[in-house]
Amino acid sequence: MNPTHLVPVATGPAVRTGPVPVPVPAAVRFRAACPDCRGRFELAAGALRLAIGASSRTTFYTFTCPECAAPVRKPAGERIIELLTGGGVRTLRLHATP
Image (cartoon, rainbow, N blue to C red; front, side):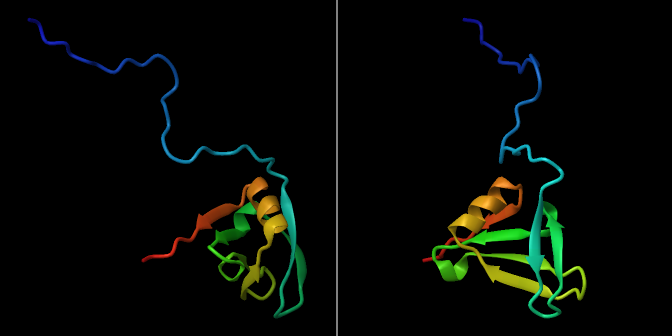
């Protein structure tokens, strides 16, 4: 009996594992305001981070104010979550540990 040797064959582009990148237009910008300096500005998706927790208290988005460099954390409701995830903002899902 002859052993069968399996060898990977490149038949096309490499298969990627992990999160699938979602194509988002580069021009997506979000309006934001800083509670410290009261500055108003527009931020690119890369300047924001979204954290989704088990409750409304642990679901928020963050950014750094471009005018005063203060870290800003604001609550995120369902509509904001939808807009930010659809706009390409990086998302972190928070899980409770037992």
